[in-house]
Structure formats: structure tokens, C-alpha cells
Length: 429
Image 1 (cartoon, rainbow, N blue to C red):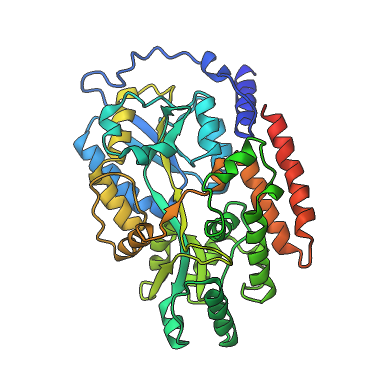
Image 2: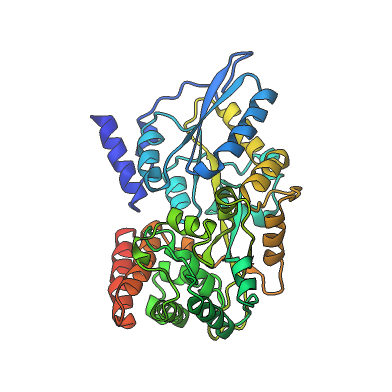
């Protein structure tokens, strides 16, 4: 019964409630911290949600186990939509999860504040694989709790064949972008397949547009601090208006609110749409769906924007369970997973950039993405991850409701969802 109460408390943590470490006090750990004794073979568990990276991870795990024959790694991939519910029960319930992944922002903050991640600040061998900038997304209150494996710029994927057949070039202004969409529509091609059927996906297009009309990359922090309402930030309404323009012009597919991420990427891979807004993590999936597709990526211009830049989204973050019974083995595995040797495989095979030093890209898609990242206008981390996970959902719900209701008053909808933000801020004090 007591264990169930602990799990319930920790579930509340994942919903944003304050947790002060109750779970740790209910667990005994007689391990001396070494994790291994002599030649004793140990098994550690590794949780994440990236099913599309399974083959690459299996390859890297095999390499690690060959170098460390006394350590066996059991990888478990949990579906994205169930990930944090399952993580709460499994990790916080003390069942397993020696090394496990989280998203940056609100989820990392919750995990760190719950005491579930080990402080890695003194693990110099691990941290030496990163530049200081590459470590920032894994820090909470100045302590290093997680390691950024991948970083994923957002962009617009486009079908080069469709563009060439319609004499189109990559747009560099909002007006150019609208002209591209109109030309494709008139040719009977769906200009943009856009998914708002899952709460995390609508952010991708929104933030890519907002990045070009908002000069402060950390503006969302003022919302989370309660210093500003979303109606106080003109770029939010301006971005919603751009999405409404695209919807009302017929540039999205039918039933965007019923389209999930996999269907969006699938439509592009099967060449049923000319463009999709997503991140570099989708490249390998598109290639798997259609090895012959000729596609590229470009930063999305915005109305009234002074730059054409995208958003650099930290991807999967790895951390070590503070309560692991195999500390040494878990730390050794975490270090290897962030080594140049491992990341050369993971990055090039999955199509994701990395902040790990000394990684060489032989994947042509990644070379293209890296060029965008290093372009004149560049990328910055304007991201809903600057707010809590609850308020990330609020912003996504705002986007969904706007796009689901033609003719809706944007000011009224922003006011409606601001009330939800206010409730979340009050609950988390």
C-alpha cells in the first residue's frame, strides 16, 4: 500500500506538482556504489522512446557490451504517448531504469526536482565529450543532470522533384512561400501536410514561424515566470495569424486535426504532399519510407520577419537513475552513449545532429542540416520547452483550437488558454 502511495505521489510530480523526495526515503540501497564486484556480470536497463532509432541503438549497445563483457544492457523502447506514465511507475516505483531518457525543459525539471536523476556535475570524463554550450540543455539549477545526445533543427522538408516540375525555388520571404503554396495547390498537389493530431507536433511549425518574428529567443520564460501573458507577446498572435492564413488558403491537407505525426511523415515519404514542417529527426524515417525520394530542407520564412532562421531543439537527453544499484556500470554506459564513437553511428544512421564533439557526418542530409544550422541567420532555442510540460500542452491546445475553428476570435482564444496557464502557475507555486 505504501509503495502505491509513493507511485501516486510521483505521478503528481510528472503532472507538475511539487515532490520533495518521498520515494527515495522509502527505498533501501545497500549497494556500495561500485555497481560491480570483480568479474560479476551485471544487467542494466535503458529506457527511451525512439523506436525509429532502434537498429542504431542496438548496434551501439553491442559495441559497448563487446568492450565491457561484464555489463549486459537491456533496452526497452516505450511508446512516446505512454512514456512518462510508464516511466513514473517503473523508475519511480523502483522496478527498473538504470539509464533513461527524457525530453528537455519541463520533463527534465520534474525528473531532476524529484531526485530521480543522479547529479553528473563531477563526472568530468563524461562531460569532456561536450562543449559548454552542448551541456546547457541538460542542466537544472546549475547542476548537470542529463546529457544531450542529439539536437534537431526544425525546418520545412520539401520534395525537390515537385518543386522542379513546377519551376519553384526555395522561398526566402513570406510572399515567396505563399506563392510556392499557391502554385502547388493549383497543380493539384497538397502544399503542406501538417499534423495537429498529437499535442507535441503542432509546436514544430509554430515555433519555426515565430522564430522569424520574435527577436527574444527566451520570451517564453517570461510567460512561465508570470511576468507576461501570451497576449502581451505580439509574435504569438502574429504566428497564429500566419497559420490561419495557410489554413484558409487551402494549403494544408484535409482533416489536419486528425493527422498524427507518423501519418504526416508518411504522406511526405510517399510523395503525397510537397512539404512538411518537422525536425531533422524525421530524415531517416523519410529515407526508410522511400529511398528514392529527392528532398531537401529549408528554414521557413515568416510574414514581417527580418530573418530566415529555424529553431534548434535539443532532442533525447540521457541521465542515470539516482537509485541505480549499478552505478559504475550505468555511468560507463552513459559515457559510451555520448562518445564520438557511438554518436558517429547514431547521428549518421538516424539523421540527427549532435552536440558531442569530434563527430564527422557522412550522411548527406546531415551535412545539409548542418549548413542550415550554421547559416547567416542561424538557429536559436525559442521553444515551448522554456515553460512547464503543462503549459507546453496549453500552447499546443491553443494552436489546435485556432486551426479547428475557422473564424474564431484569436484574442478570445488566447485569453481562454491564458487562464489555463494561470491555473498551472498557481498550482506549481
